[in-house]
Length: 328
Image (cartoon, rainbow, N blue to C red):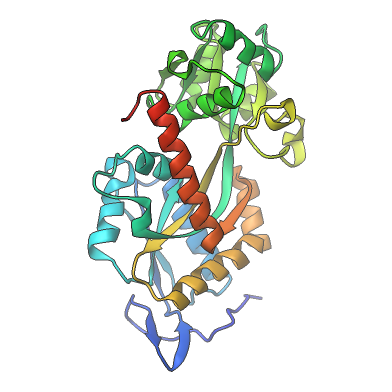
């Protein structure tokens, strides 16, 4: 049986949500989700999977239309939300750590994280640092000790560009381990995590920095060994055999979260409805099944807590980017 929202769903043809001083916020039948990329990527998955569960559970009575809006690594969608959708309570926009990274580095020129309403994160793909199975480095501390002795002795590869989230993961870990010459750490950008892993397995570079979902097949085949998962605690189920950086005394946490922001100017009760609805969705068995089927790990923040988390993440990434000379 479908779960029903606490407030009565209104039947209307407009995509705009109505509010009134006489009644609490009531969602209409349909909503829109902007995926800031072409179909098939992570943001597209976030929109389509969350939209389906929202309708399956009856939180949106009609449908959630996914609109793909690629360009500038999410910048086109961010600018569209700011300039054309202010106050639109029927709109949600998919986001991730890639969004906060680009905001922190000023890649969305003239735009900041404070210009939208951050709603919720509904799961994450945690960062990892891995080496080839026959690597001499058996622990994260051994790898970091080698970098401290000679920052040029270890080359890392990942699927993001120089200064992107994969690059920053190893720098987050190195900084937490006490490495002082972060700009000297070598990072090579490849066209996807699989290509970078192939270079590690082939002995061309020493370390891989990416996400848990990217290494699973290579770990199962015996080609790759994970030195650390960048999570607060060990991951559930079969992934529990991978050690965290934290348990090795290196306080490095790097979740690639999946979530949403909403336009500025929406009413407070609309924002509250969305955050509470995301809370219920995250707790549902339907969403837990989606997470399990798609390799998402537990990670959930919403409302004011998520706003604070995003602002701190932007601050931390900006400081790290300045430290390595990526931005001024």
